[in-house]
Image (cartoon, rainbow over all chains, first blue to last red; front, side, top):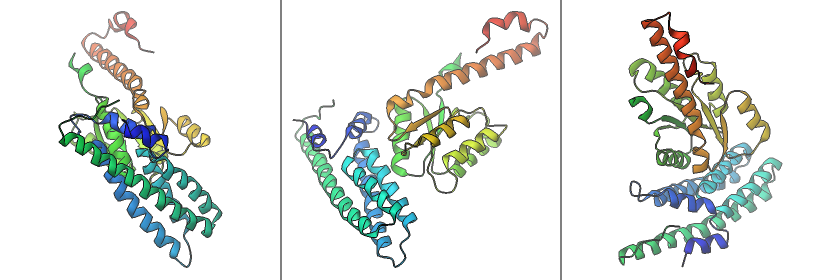
Length: 140
Length: 165
């Protein structure tokens, strides 16, 4: 059973995630967990900033675009494909200065983020269980 | 000779923590020594400090993100190429945006390569030829210079075959 393959099938994680796993080695056994944790911290911060920015009377679209650009970048770096896709649409609405579109995208990106977060957390939990039971995680 | 076994030292510049961590891992996996900084300003400081304080630590290649607040990767590229001390250091640019005009401008203005993010191990493998070429050229120049000091008359005939194109 390959959980990652399964996630890839549903498009939650793309090939980039596999690249991260391949980079992990004895010198850096927690590499993937560390990178993913950074992604969680970064994303949560950015989502809060975005919500705040969209509540303003005079919306600063440049600022919003900068945040979304960051979110797009970090989601792409870990392979969170669906989050990345919503960010692309989000940036288009920013360019059009379309507040409705932006709010819709914020909702969508929040949703996609929480989905991929759940997937990744259960992936790590499962790996932890396997390791605790004395098994090993097969690397492709 | 020991020189050819010394690890290449790469200076990585990226304002995002995740990407810095990633590029550092990619470079270390490829056996490079890495220094990672979060801005163009810090990169220039690092290069400047090396010159004055520690002659032995040299930077063999700079890999930088394009989109950074303040000094962009392009600004950094220009500063490096305009500097008499650093212009020969190869510079590689990374960007998450695939903008052809941006790519050609960077390459025209002296960048050796332009990588689209997320950067892969296969991209990092492309760095080695640039580094090897520079190291060979530097070694040839050093030996030529030394030989001219020792025996100025015999240089040309003896070292013709070591010309590196």
